[in-house]
Length: 126
Image (cartoon, rainbow, N blue to C red):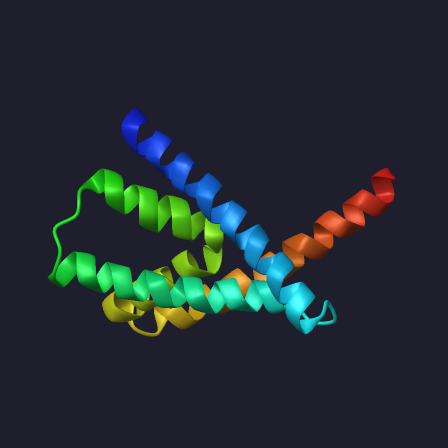
């Protein structure tokens, strides 16, 4: 394990999570709290930024592993995990085609099922 990369991921994650919170507060005060405007905003913006930056880092700009970790894993991971999910799905689609659809379906089904299971367990415990 590279301690420097772990620190960069943590620093970026702290900044990204703080930005996610601020976007959520702003969007809620601007458009109301009857819909998760903050979440959809960070998911769309984070996915766009992930695609843009991965493309730029791969084809145009040489960026250190530390900066990639700070920005892609840390900041965008803290800002929205959906951006990582989107990148993983696109990468899987490019490498294994239709397996990406299984990944999306399994992620959604198992994610929602796990959330429901956690809620049910909390009811039992409480």
